[in-house]
Image (tube, rainbow, N blue to C red; front, side, top):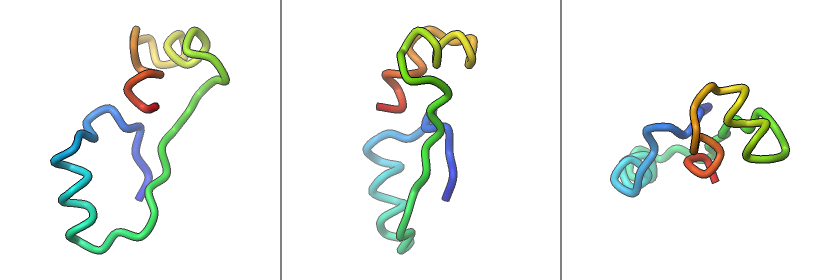
Length: 50
């Protein structure tokens, strides 16, 4: 499963585990929060993925 992680919270993680998903890939669009947030045009996006 590939996601940007924006809507993944503890409940979503539990549901993914229940469905048997074996791997989740989350997008990082920069090596720093500043670069990632700028690319996503959303402050805090980096921390949301981490």
